[in-house]
Length: 128
Image 1: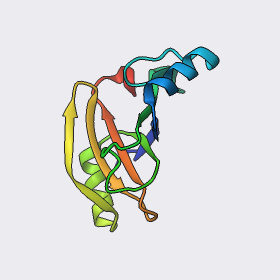
Image 2: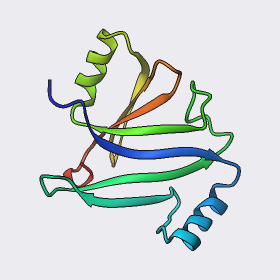
Image 3: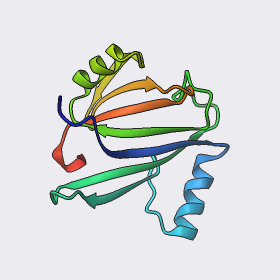
């Protein structure tokens, strides 16, 4: 099996007012924000362009379920389908669905403390 996690894809957290939080971070810390939050671009050790997403979500979002936590981590992975099979065989709680969108393929697991973890296999090497 290839590498499992290749980096942090994003940090997502709940807030009462995502727009106000994005505006505050834009105004006071200089984050370049859009509808999702802010994307940080960087290069990995191989010199490839990579990104990490910072996103505030509305406090009543259902996206983090079944977790009741106020945050969710996203990890970049190399082969989502293979990794999910391996994790399931290891006894990890794997969510039943995956989703493919323009940015790549997503799957979800739950860790031993009930934190929902999003796993992301980017479509484009620019997101690796």
